[in-house]
Image (cartoon, rainbow, N blue to C red; front, side, top):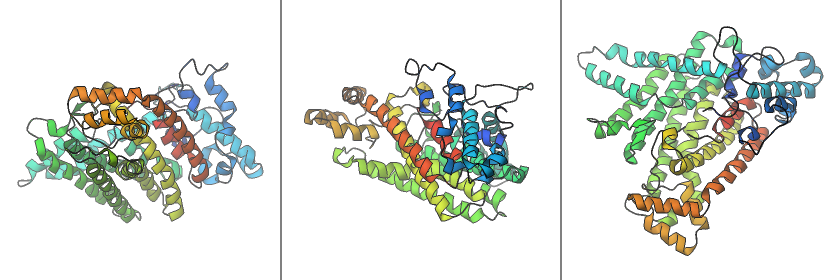
Length: 463
């Protein structure tokens, strides 16, 4: 089902207090370790700036975000705001804010005297350190139970093997988006614990999907270790373990959020996201039934439907929407605009994932790709069918969906013959540009940084 998800460029994950005063950790955190300009991701010799690129970007930061997005939004300009500029001269206020955001994304890493972690790294550390509390809440009371103690011990093992080891981007998105949307004075310890917990609920949903998907796809490795069902003594018992992971989501929401006004919204959001993802998985399975290769099924329309439901809803819309509900943002317009951007981003992400399945480095991605063997309706095979000659289509028909290594290699050679790696590179550039334009048009009234941070984080990713 699903994706395998850090840093690159200028070591941009580390941030500082600088430029126009204290930028505020709640804003710096959403940098996601990436520069907002695509040029920064292009290695030499294509970009050879005459001055440090970060300085140049800061000097032209005004062009990166439109004034209409910034000037009227006093509430979430926060510590970037300069009242005399924003209220009296909105264009200058917008310019100042854009420069500050640009500096946040492009400044070279620095540490203060105490060698504190940068804001993103601190958020990630806080998120990971909250996991033992998640396990404790889910297992502590039942470990010694005379009737269910053994099952709870198994649950603890399932959690500690399957919920950790990823990049935590989905779960971290909840925390960081929450910090971006909620005023700092309202971010008390209890509300941050709830945001951390809801983030872990998203990670548990991901774990539930991955354990199930690995069984259906006969996968071998996940996150750099053997798949859970492949472990000795586990086998198809992993199906029940996956269901346990899903059940834990609603136990955690009840413990931490039951008294909150957004509790019902979160329950419905998780249920709807699960259903949408399972519909997407169903489309994926029936499009590529085992033992039957029908290339006519692999259309671009079907592919986009699979990606939208199987990946985009739970990977991108779910974590941001959860943070929005927790921040009291439940308007249809705001959620519709966010969904429009995030579903586009999800398609971008899944196409990257399909490419990395075959052309990625397993030591980096953490898994061995099997899309060809599994007869998957992937972006690569859809592109191949659009460009292949009758002779090339015959080669694909004879070799696709087969387990033999030489047949897999023949399909890969066909993709290379059609220059699909270059087609993907061009797609990535074009898609990123469309995404930036969509953010510019649709982000308001939400902070564009929420969407920019996600987009910059996945652009040109290798895992």
